Image 1 (cartoon, one colour):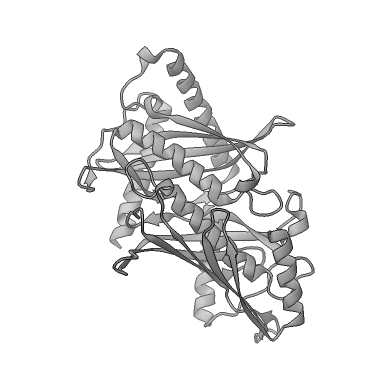
Image 2 (cartoon, rainbow, N blue to C red):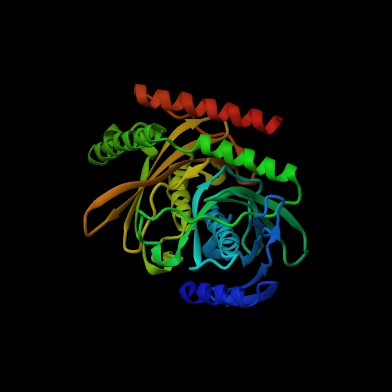
Length: 394
């Protein structure tokens, strides 16, 4: 659908440069209705003579149904992450196509900053997701996403999630060409110089925090160790130690299909994040043996795109526990079944909490670490836990 929609929108933008405002209503594959306001405006001219364009936004809504929930009835964290990426993708793609590029551009998620889960969402509630472009660099743009749960019966609402994401864009005909660099983006018109500088500071900060090659190699090494331990315990279950790393480590394999893709046969980042939350949730449930919910997601860099018909293998293992939370690392590999080439696509850490029958956060068992590698990961997790606590009290 995007292959026909985006060229048509770009053509309209060329014909109506001063102002084009229209609302596109399209039905999701499951029959849900989205109202998508799309605005193209004439670019403002800044003091430096460059034409600048207004920020774009996107709003999507979805009723939470039983198939969106975990076994305990809370809406699955992966469902929310998928919605976050859908809204961010729309806002970013709209912005990239301002200025009538020679060929329509399609945005893809390059990095997501820490995503917080402020409150759970429940079956029957309406998820309202708002995404807005807040800063644009030469080849990437920042999108802020807010998620609100609305009770359709009472009208009461509450904020459930916030996330900050960075997107890049490529021409739609070159999405399958990894050697093609991200497209240059039109500069944005800011409300003030202070707002622009604050956005630039965030851009510089997130560049420093991107996962290095050394960190990615460390994830691959840790994953190999966990996989070996998982295989050993599968063959010798009598050696399993309760609440140890290997006792709850889990894996998941998924064949990507056209329904997982957005445009050009590229799998949506939200699909991958949902799978990651799935396998992390299995680890948390195995460790706690209680109802668990996602509390937060650390920053995540997408190193390689995942394509249609790839085999995606996910591995997850616990790294740290506090009295009431568990940190779980997840690594995602994509394999081209024709060449058998497998690459690390991305990795991140999820934090889960356990809930008692009344829905309150409960204590959970301590993680048993035995090897030097497990102890080192536990200490690193403890440092991150303390840093997050300090950040919340500021």
